[in-house]
Image (tube, rainbow, N blue to C red; front, side, top):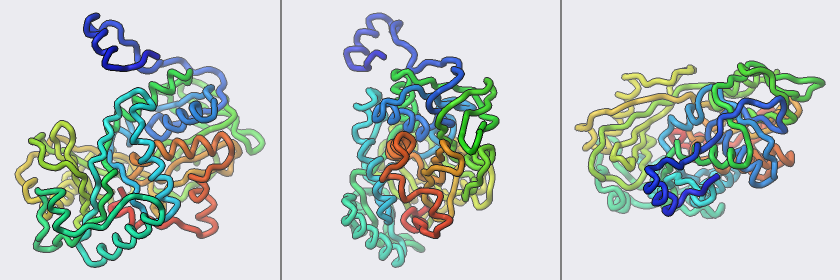
Length: 414
């Protein structure tokens, strides 16, 4: 793999850019691998990458039924934060946030990480108490956050209206080192690094069945024929229940659509991420000038990957109360992604009843921020059988009643 650099760009400019090689290979699948990862989104590719980097396991195939990063990784709004309430959640999200800070250097690929800061608005007295509690918890966890007043909110985001008629801004939970990254670049960077280690990334390869023998995984049936493996990782977000059924077990998740939109591009006016959970919306401005807007998930189970007018209207109407200026903007495009929700709004990173099969799912609408930490912990779990990052997120917690309730700290679940 050739390293990207300013010198490489200058060299290729003199060659009319004829010397660039493909970022990752597109091989045909081999008969057998040590590890198969199903799902070439951010979480699946990160798992494969850290299997190779941290444990030297490179005989790995990443299977994707569509195109690389074409699922939720390419359909999210790129928010990165770690200010969660529960210790287990804060640990894995803070690990992820810290990995994001050096990810471009680690992968030799610009993921466009922007630590612009994330604020979660408190617009009711209940939220004030909740966010103050979270700030205290974060201090004990070593996560750098603080509770700020409305004047500081206005200073950080001048376009906000803090004296709204229904929901005035009473303060906010502020994480200065949170921010955004480019979702496609994260997937592409991991894919390029995995390919350079000799791993096979196989697109247009749908898994149609899971093969097992004596309670142990033996391989998968795919649209490109059977492939054997010693270990199988299922990392397919909203389709996790479908793959689990193929493997012979059920998951405590439900799949729903999450919608978002971007406006026409405008001049820079907002350099932070703002989440307004009371009015159920959030917003940031992209590098191209678009206002990136989203809200909560659909209220019913579905596998839709498109937007709907009534949901977009509800989200935008709510945000206009806090950001009156966006009432004059035109929508450029909208989309939807399929998210997998657990009852306690926390993920599942776990062994499964099928020996050798591991599951990574349940991230709900906040999976993008967890990609590096999720991959780090999942790789350790698959390689060694245990990981401190994933221990609390096992499937057993639903049977034992030890839930990790993040329904409040997740706000609109992002």
